[in-house]
Length: 251
Image 1: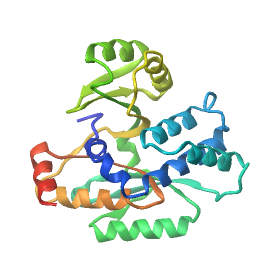
Image 2 (image 1 turned 45 degrees about the horizontal axis):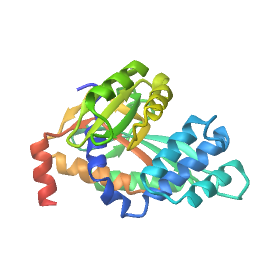
Image 3 (image 1 turned 90 degrees about the horizontal axis):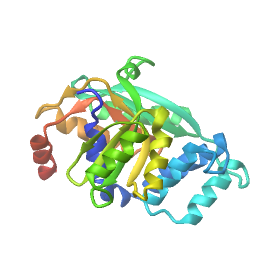
Image 4 (image 1 turned 30 degrees about the vertical axis):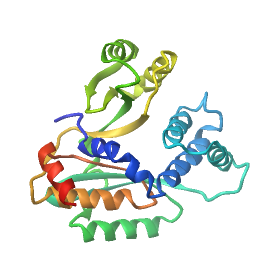
């Protein structure tokens, strides 16, 4: 199914658990720092920084942490220099995986990622062999308590959103990157609180994971997400909700 990301849905539902791992702040701080370095420390004129700060607020990050990360990015405070790298891989069942990383040591990072992949039945792929199957999209998540579906449809679609899907406890707004900031500002102007808003990579096609490969794929995705240098992981797999529930209940 084009425009579908099962992994992003799984991550959102277990977001509270991820926060306890203590690595959520680290990933957000890296993003704030790089965003400030590339576009300056003023969030009004730096869309990437504004999006990173929204993620920090959603994760309940203290303001002092945010301000310090911005100063590191702008050079006011000495800091580590991070490089952005995209890795491509194949996982169990031939699932395509795209990883966005920030690192101060490329050799260390690629070695550790290769080790994780090998341990979970995957392998690194050549550049371009996986990326073609993904397209950049803006995804905005809004709690059902924050806005009615009718109001959201009117605000988001009028501002340029592509479509809106309904999850169990939230709405997910799918936006072309060109309209991402416009839709966000429209929601902010309407006082609609966003749980999250980010540019992501959605698969154009997906592979159905069966009872044998699904647990392996999920374990690999968890391991990659847990690596401190990996900011985002995307994959083109789909899992039936019933099978996913069975796997989570036996984990």
